[in-house]
Image: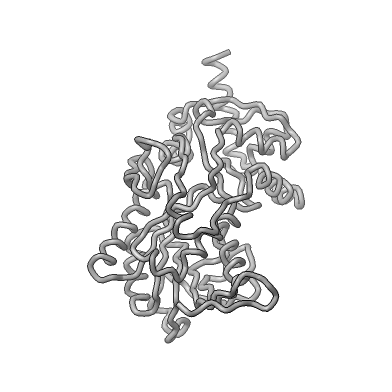
Length: 344
């Protein structure tokens, strides 16, 4: 890690790190790319060139498919990095390929895992980094946990310099927290009821991507973070009833909520059900003591009230974004009708 250099304009010192993001134009990584450049890092982005989000101005674009490493020799050539952040690996096979590709090329490999890998339901709250990684409901989460286990095995055996980061529900202005995207907001505005899983009282943590970026960037180039795992989340916990109401108010509506057990939703739609039973149906409150110890500047400040206004503003800027998915809309109609039959 190179020494920090004071900037003449009084901004925070530039961090002369050379970093590679595998991805870098996604919901979470786009904010991290912007902050990395703001902090003076030399940022390379390896992408397939298919994202709807533009590459941050000032980043060095490398086009290629990380899932076909044999084709990357000309792209990466003899480049080495202070840190590589892997945003788009989801299986141990993909991580194993990364280890072979970047061993000796980077001082730090950061794997973006998922807080959904934590024990469900958690035995105790708040969740810490020592909470077991056991999620019997969601294969996505189990694969992330398996990726972590593989990395830590290589760290212990070969000192492959890895750091694990577990985002929870991290959003930007394009991401509504509901299954089916804009569909629930469209229903609110049409005067229809919207489905809320369970009784709506389970607690959830919504993290703005700009807050997350501060935590992640503070770990890059930090030797003490090697061999460690961190979750990076907001400290604000909201019930799902509150989340729906906050979004509704931002959209100018007081929503009509119909509560449906997560198990019932899973019978109607296994995909939606897996994301509920494997994650959102359980209260998830996080202890951020560890990330704040390693990154003292991490202090999430953006409340979901503000984030919801940003989201609705983005959707209202272009009506073409206001897509109501017919299947999800019809599914909610059927779930609402089923609950009315049970509790007329």
